[in-house]
Image (tube, helix red, strand yellow):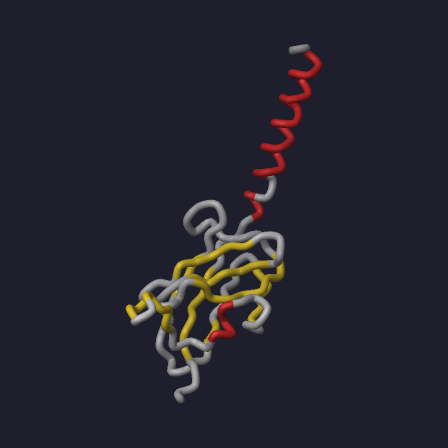
Length: 137
């Protein structure tokens, strides 16, 4: 292999590593609390922040709180505007057709495009919100 080609590979590798980690220092710790419309904490699943390019999630705790993770636990997210939704909040129960996901939370909160939740992530901020329960039939 020629020296020129070898130097070019090293340059591309260096550039890739620099681009990969260039935003890491800009993360801010961010979290909040999720409750349902009855005032009870939501304790299953994840809160997801997404802007179409990047996303971060925070696992809901037993008291309804969450902290966002991007690359490692609790490291936060880069400041900016994000759509917010819930993922993995279903409880799976057996049925004649196999496992079925069951949730009391309105299905609109399962997608960034339907949740109508948005947030601007800033240093020292937090995002608490309430989700509606499904209407009883």
